[in-house]
Image (cartoon, rainbow, N blue to C red):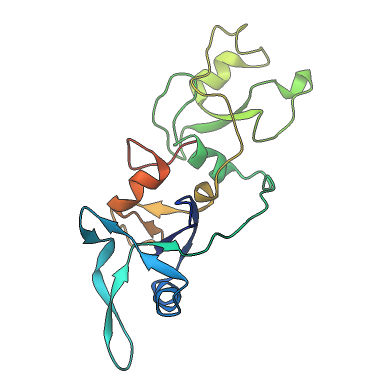
Length: 186
């Protein structure tokens, strides 16, 4: 499903909206279409109204800043895996549902809790190797310290358009998440 990335006036990602909502924001003067390399950031499709057709926007920026209070959201496995880019945080191998696990940096047996700052994505091999030991006791090293997820980690995306209803990724969005790869990490 193609969506429009909505940026705050300070260029930080806020959310995804439907193309109809995006056009409404533009028409009411609340948002502006972003230009990338002297071309508008749009999908190669149109949205039709009874009177005219509009290019389907891919990226918009709000004219006025929206202040949002950020509370760490409830822990969810898929969001954790999205945050960690579906990559083992010890050996950096790419993972999928068949071989992904959650590792507690401070093991639950030692008082560790299930939280964003104590859990990381790990492959089964590394998780078994670590067991109830600390990271250093197991001879492992975390690639990135765990942190709260960003709003984008709660959204599903689909880079190749498999048709399963996931969010399609637009190439213009990469710069707003400061990512070298077309996936999202911390």
